Length: 473
Image (tube, rainbow, N blue to C red):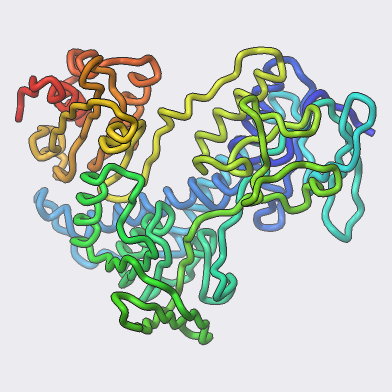
C-alpha cells in the first residue's frame, strides 16, 4: 500500500492548490479525483472543466459577437452579415479547458504529486494515518495511506424539487453545450451563474426570461450596484421576474413548460431550454464519511474549526464542501492555508475581503461591507462614488456604464468596502482588496498616483470623493 504525508480528495481549485502547496513544503503528496471529460481523467474540478473557465470563454466569445453586431458602428466600423459558428465557438471553449486542465497535470508532475483517478473513500484509521479506498462503484479499487487527509470535494448544482436535470432541463454544464441557440431560454435563478449564462445566450440570439423567487436582484450586493446592473440587463433584453413561485415544470420533449405564480396570477411559459441555477449543495458522494463518523452540519456541509480541522484526527476540509462563499479563489486560498497549517505555519484567509465578481456586461464586482451592512454593525460611514461616464478611458473605450463606490469608516477613514459595476471591474477590484487587506484608508487610495487615462482612475476618484475631494465630478 502506497503511503503519503498528505492525501487530497478532490482535484478542483481548492484541492489541486492544496496539493501543490503541500508538495512545496516538502511533503509527499497524492491527489485523488473522480472527474472525467471525454472519457479521460481531467483535473481542475467543476471550475476548470464545466464552470468558471468554460463559461468565461463563452462569455468572451458572445460579447465579441455582440460588439461586432451592435456596438462597433459607433466607432466607425460597420460589419454586415456577421454569423455565429457555434460549433467552432464551443470548440474554442474546449481548447481553453484542455490547456488549463493539462496545466494542472503538468504542475502535479513538476511537484512530484501522485494523481489517482476515482472516488476517495475514508475507510479506517491505521496507526497514525488514514486508509483511503480509491476507485469507482462496481469496479476494482485500491488503497493508499496518508498521515493527513484534506477533503476538497466541492459542490453540485441544486436541482428543482419539481424536476430533475435531463433532457431540456439543464444545469450549468448543460448550458455550456447547447448544439444550437435556443429561441426561447428560461433561467430559474437570478444569481451569478444564471445571469452569466443567460447573458451568453441572449447575446447569441435567444429570448431570455429569468425567474427568481427572491423579491429583488443580487440582494447581497450594494443596492446602488444591483439597481444599476438590473437596469443595464433589462435594456439588453433580459426579462426578469421576481417574487415568483414555481408550481410546475414539465419537459415536453421538444420544449419545457414552467408554471409559476407572480403577483397572485398563475402564468405558464414555454421554453426551448430551461437552465436551473438555484444554488449548489455540498458534494460528499463516495467520501465514506458516514462510516468513520465525519460530522456534517444540518445542511450537509462538512463541519470544521477555524483551522479547517474536522472532528476526525488529521482530516481537514476546505472549499465548497465546508460552505461559506462558493468561490474558486476562496477555495484556493484555503488550500494554501491548510497546507501551511499542516506544516506548522500560520496559514490564514481573510474572509472579510474576498472579492465577488459577475462576468456580465457590464461586469459587477465588490469586496467588503456594503454601506447598509456597515451601518448595521453600528459604524458611522461615509461614501464616495464616481461614474465611468466621467472617466476618459471608459468614454474612449465606448463603455461609460456604471460607477465605483467606496464605503469608509467616518471616524478612521478605513475602507470598509468597495463596490463596482462597469467595464473591466473584475480586474479593478484587486486594487481595493489589496488596500483593505492592509487596512488602508480612502485617502491612501485617493492619493495614490494612477496612470492617466485608465479605468482605475474611477477607483481613485471614488476614494477621493469620500473626503469630498473628487476632482472630475
